[in-house]
Image (cartoon, rainbow, N blue to C red; front, side, top):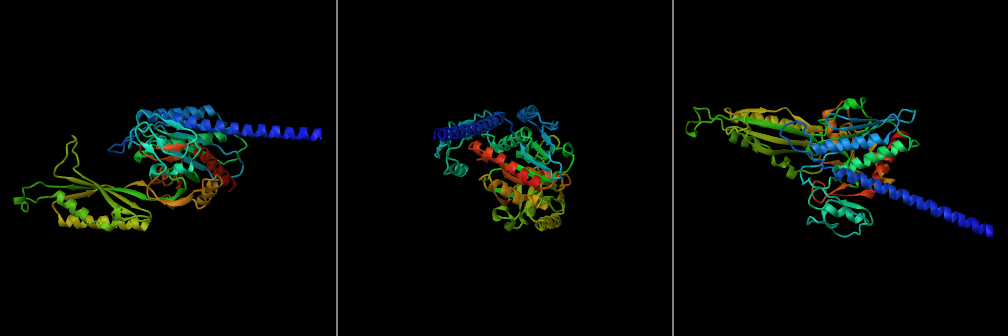
Length: 454
């Protein structure tokens, strides 16, 4: 009897010790993720808009790239190659540790943050054991589960929430993705028993100004990846399998200024009226205000005087700038034909105005054209297993992957964009949940396991 009691006590003691160790490990992982994320958001890495296609780099962008590069180098890892490029992209190349041939995986996120909200003087605030109520920030705003920016909070009672102080953005877009991916890299390096094919990680710059592909160098990895995933989503229950193809078109209307009283004999080129006529030929039904779902649109977002070499506006000339968006290639062909027809009609109606068009600028491409068929069900399974189920969706926007495919169609297949833990993005309401970032590391590991077992 005494022996049985002693055995029972030993089992109970071992069980309590084991559970305590599991709790301790979980707490350490949680705090490590929290500290990593705080380190990233404390580096103010806003990108900036420019009028041309140059690739500016702010000092904050350089600092975060150097910080992450040093962090990964310190992790070690046999044969792991870490590169910091001249454009301050960070590339991490982890070789396979299985002998069989399995698809290679490239996972991406971006280190810059948007210039669309204040980004200097960021002061992150950690809210542990969130109670489910409003979060009143010192900057005078309230983050509430009853508002669009905070609606997901209702699902995170008891979790750790990080916000700014309400005077600036936080930088969750996409430093959550960076924190998830560097934590994933650490897990792979420190756990040699985790079986995987080749895993590549690319952290880009200038994504939030639409230029994530401009500084990317596909030769760093060399081979075209078989699978691409972009960790940069704000919707916790969906991932993208398609997105707009985004094309920019600019039209230049060069006028000839003559007094209206002598307009005919002086060959008056009225660029303003010609540009307005051209714009008026676009059917209202394809304006973005009348389109949704998988419907594309044609949108003139600027009508302005071009500038001469000295930066002075040319008052006689006008430039129209258009966004063309479509999911389906046939719709894209129709939109281009429509613009060509309108151009011919306008030129015929206003022969004294010289009209020219820039070459199409494909800013991002529909990932659906080259997305592997096996990837969506894998993402669904990987997320469902962690209690954060995501369903496939079509995205009326673009992602880093979509930008990469547009610029490097032969070097990059389309990749799904999945949730990264960012919320309330591009605003002073921005926030993230640390517990979700831990879950997303597991989702990535599940995905890698599925790809390895394929």
